[in-house]
Image 1 (tube, rainbow over the protein chains, first blue to last red):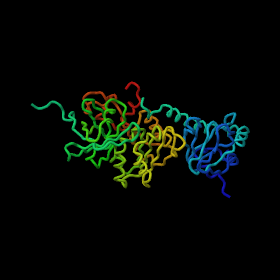
Image 2: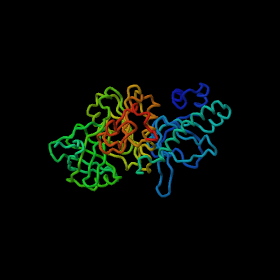
Image 3: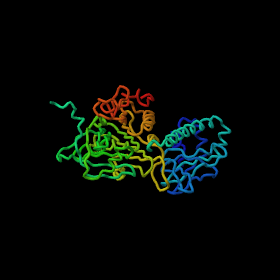
Image 4: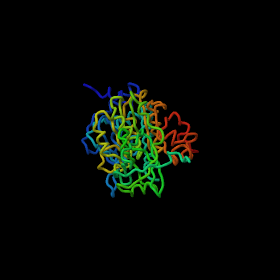
Length: 152
Length: 279
């Protein structure tokens, strides 16, 4: 049976992990699929997974009562969706909706948190990788806030 | 007595053939010489000084096809006195045009390489002639990738052409907007986030960037992090061009004159000046 290990081993997000660490992560991973328009996660719900998008596109949305859902970012192939699983109270801050048929690897949050508590080296490695993702997203958000294409 | 006014200072009359609405505040005007037969040869990336008689003159990039010199196209956003006046003009009205001025995109130098074009907002206008040139000689280049960022889906320029380009198998076109409501199916975020999503050969890639300077700054960082050399990155700088022929100094960028040395610069030649606060 083919496991997720070869795919995850080559994924840039997990590149450089020790083989035993990769095995732990594979143990918490599963394949998932979402139809177009299907919500993957909802604001306020428990952050039970994070996802590595294999194929497709996902919109991160904030719902507003006057304008409806507003997309703040889209995430595509090879990118990571969700970091609220790392930070208490482990609840999603946004909605995420597949805007195309999307396949992803889901990583079980409880499983990974428990493994990280047991193995701080693994926890540190994951935290470093998520910090990189969070920094990139923060930088992009700051650029968005500048409204560089607006008339100033 | 011979005139002391250099000829490039005399505007030539051009008649508005057609005005196309691109977005709520941006139009493309198609101009024909009032002399009829005269063409207007230019290179991709160059600009003209466009004169609304009695109002004033502004520098505007040429956004048309260099292989069709008979029809001069300019895309302009209505933000100042002159551009607002341009948008009030109608088909048949006459404008003054001086040019073409400045440097051009390295269309020939890029032959044999992959090409990445990164445009932000109205920055797509001076890059459209490059795309026309590449498409007309498609087999001379490796991958051709257009990354285009705009404020919202409503602010995208050249929507029909974007669709046509996206439909081609030999072009990779990625569009992204800063914000969108639920019915937009495309990418949302800043244009720099598209760079990690594309595949190219960094040692044999030429990049061309045009947009707000802050957008270009972060685009440069991303391209450099992907291994593209500074000498293969080209940027179009915007300054307050007035004379267009390197006389008045309004467009000075340190020791460079954007109207003559630019607007298209090899990044390697201006890296010390780029983003410098004092200039």
